[in-house]
Image (cartoon, rainbow, N blue to C red; front, side, top):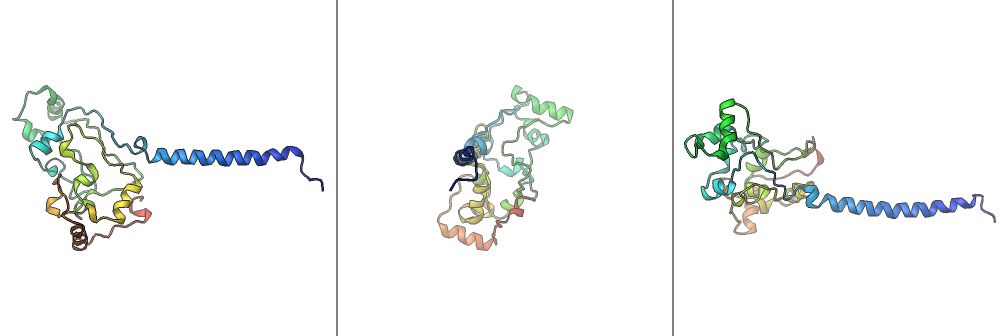
Length: 213
């Protein structure tokens, strides 16, 4: 029986097949790129206006993270330290250092130091620092060993999948609240995380509205 369709319609099948294969390849490439450091910003290390060394301040001097990031236990944002915080020490320590010129200029003018944010989530993702810190999630879990970084860089992907891994299994990232800023903290065993999860009533949500509001 003769086909009611003209011969050229046979090419449609071939085109659809090629399109399906091309779409699959495209999807694989997009997913691969989406989970690569190029998309998650792992390794991102911007140049700052002042060469502030976390290795010296948080490492060698042992300064607690909360001395500079004072709102981390109370607010959703950790907050970039105010110039007053820097000058509390540097009004007397290295007061003539050329490296600290932007800080002194900020102190004199009242304008902010133009720090570049390293761990910067997209606007469509909501993250509450206080909600995590007050439940026993340590700074190093998300920011890495800041105390060993001369210049801060992003060591974790901060992706949705990475966050969900912790929400589904938070025990390995829990620690006593008194040790929240102890960078070299290590659990003595999995039973510690399980005990802290029960003690702190840690029950992370996984629904979309938790992070996308």
